[in-house]
Image 1: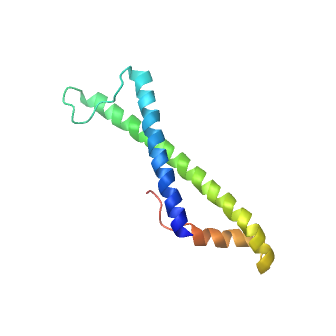
Image 2: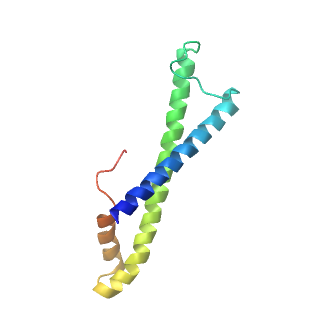
Length: 114
């Protein structure tokens, strides 16, 4: 099941990245009136403008990344609770114990910050 979780995480990450790019471009266009944010290699732009764009882009990316990971974790948790309801009946454990055991089995440990 961990392979399925990894594939789902990859798809969610890719979609989250696309959403972050669209959201940042829309935000930049509304606030600055320009279609594209300045690139760090564009020497015609000042330090302040380049760093402001990079900081805003990082903030939007971090926000979208946290939101997508949170939604994926909640979805996985709901799935685990739903499946643990039937597992609790067959093994004699409670639903909560079965959910905790399955969560530890399915969710990779040490994947924070990636």
